[in-house]
Length: 512
Ligand SMILES: Cc1cc2nc3c(=O)[nH]c(=O)nc-3n(C[C@H](O)[C@H](O)[C@H](O)COP(=O)(O)OP(=O)(O)OC[C@H]3O[C@@H](n4cnc5c(N)ncnc54)[C@H](O)[C@@H]3O)c2cc1C
Ligand code: SF4
Image 1 (cartoon, rainbow, N blue to C red):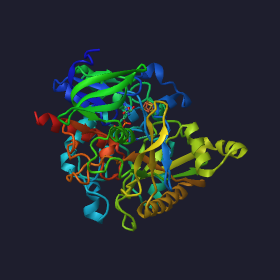
Image 2: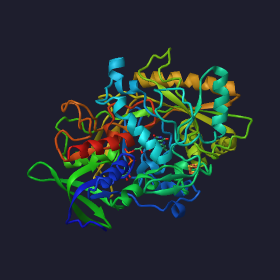
Image 3: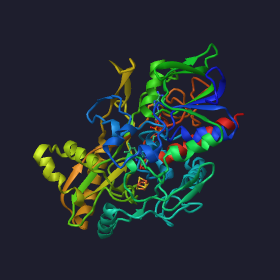
Image 4: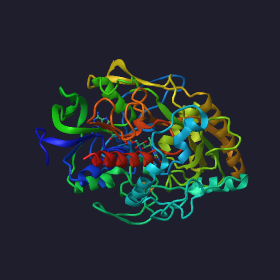
């Protein structure tokens, strides 16, 4: 262990996912003494990630969270991960950039919230990240501002569902493109990390990539951070942030091997993900003079439409995040706020069957019969914006977890805009599948990715952190994860979380 708990380190980073790992590397590279406290294990993908979907449940945050509201959010594998690398261990690695207007929802539609920063303040970070982690993508992408540099690697092969979606979209006049995906289409060299092999098309991205072709944080920014001297302390569950008389956090308390330990520090970067970041602040009564901690919970609209095809689709094969269309970013006939993108789905068998049980209510013999069509099923899903509402929030419940800490309770109900968007997308996707020759279509309504709870903004009365991720109340506390998003965006979040993470580190370092 390079640092002792009695040392006063420059920074403690809590959580090593998309929000924590990039800034950890940046701070370490600047020569700071940094320690990352991570609740989960530090896995060795080659040994610990078998091609066995059930065995990989260990990558999910499985502590119980209570779900309330009209559309209660399922947690576990639907939402967040644990381990060095956080949820990127099991993400699908779709990495689209935001559109500039995604950040100005309130200005455009008069509802929701604008971001305190514009596209020009994150664009250079997108470029840097795409070239560091090795994003594969097309040479021409039909949507969004023109790129300054092309993707570092060519596109990945399109899986079965993607090929059928391409066919159906062409029939109905919707443009498609191979997606930007943070999995390597060829071997790639990374500074401070070394060579990573190209994707083997094993299709198990959501169960952890055992060859390191997918850019999860454990094979990209974490080794870079370690190269520059950062210490990673896995299996360290943070419970308290202790404030000194000057109103700053002076030590972080965590449980490791059943023992309580304390790390003294000058700065804290809280990167524990939407739910755990807000839970830690609420449990400790911190950074909440605005009353906004836990408010504004959002979750992307994520309807899936499945169809059965005569062709052999084999949904478990090939890169699951393959084909995209952003033609619905601002559709002309929209009766909702914002927009959505369309993406082809690759799915492992246990996930697919559990979705059929939840979405279609099938069980026993009926489920068995439907399961026999698995190899001929193809899915498309949307990922759409979601507005912040008063009625969607997170609180601490009276129920205690196995550590004696209050379980979080999350309220979520889709509003009119999300319902209209879902109805619009239902028709669009059924038209695509019908044109591609699908039979026996069925819909799986869902919301994906929990966002919000510690909104960033310019006004300390309505936001928890400023545009740099710094708490308005506690000057040596920063937050960097998907809790700070003021609006949900109409694209997958991880690339933007990483970009904000690097920006937060740079803004912090610039203050000297
Ligand atoms: C199945 C699935 C597929 C996805 N696919 C995509 C995709 O294709 N593209 C995309 O952009 N996004 C995708 N996402 C979403 C994306 O993975 C997340 O939005 C993103 O990783 C969240 O980053 P984060 O830093 O906020 O949190 P996380 O990455 O979840 O990191 C938080 C970390 O904090 C740790 N932690 C929490 N509490 C404590 C504590 N008290 N003490 C110490 N450590 C703690 C956790 O163990 C975890 O490692 C997907 C998500 C899922 C579930
Ligand atoms: S499909 Fe490629 S990136 Fe995904 S788990 Fe397999 S080898 Fe890794």
